[in-house]
Image (tube, rainbow, N blue to C red; front, side, top):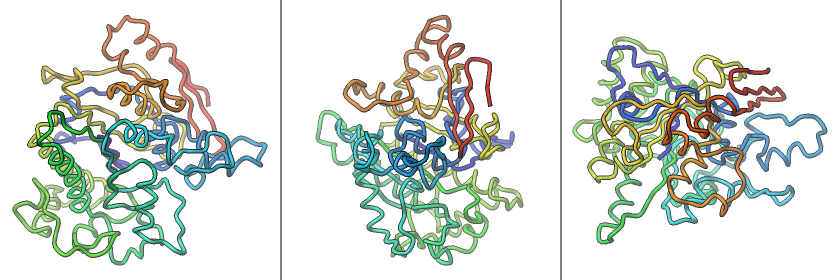
Length: 397
């Protein structure tokens, strides 16, 4: 399971307002030197889902093939699309983590903000958009947001952030995957790519909580309110949302309200995974798209991210104590690392820029693999036509 909040505030603030995020962090593996490849949501997500730098995007290569200058790394040119006009141009159908896992027996799901498609704003259709996402390796695609909420494709006067709707669809994916295999000796493995819209600046979170019914969604109006464990299972959507406002103690900013709403969503997913006896055997990744204070900057505040993994069966924090890894890792390492834990042979899939950090985490601190991540590795960063590189303790801008 991959979980990507946009611009999330990971600070619990000492008030215990984010217990579920803290549970993942303190009872899992925290990557202390984690980086994105590019400090924007869409370009960063491309790297996470493919294991490649944004400049490798087939759509980017198509857009820049007549340009002799360095590639322009921006969201409109970094999409998960197939094209026959460049070499190795099957980003959507073959060259991404979901497609590879799907080909290896996993049931795959996508919920939330996509931001990796070339949306036709003049002829936007939700069902057609969902078919596009499913064509990129996903069996299940629900509660989809094609772009940021400020985008004019949405007619935003009738829907906004809706974490109850998103979480219900994610819960449905988990429970239906479990129920399909109750009579089988082995459960069907699953991969869920969950991208909440909060607390992104795309729409006002306070207005979403107070003015928009949770029956209003990007795919149309629901017949009834979502019923979500731990959120709306025993109360109305309006009553639940009031608890979010109450816990914020008068704060109305997107960051404060969005973090609480987001944490409740994580709690719901954790509850369902526990109830279906899958939590310990689920690789639950939480990470930010980009740095909290330096979006669009290649300096450390823009490229350094929060990233942690809860996976007890993988050996993380079995003694209920936080485990840390100090080596340099990147979002491009997520795909190869997950494939490593899933037992998918790397030689059988497409080339990636990232490498699995599994061996380094499992070995002693003095091993050659661990020392490579801590002292010898080089990571590269891209945005627009700017570039940066960090090798060991040195960073060149």
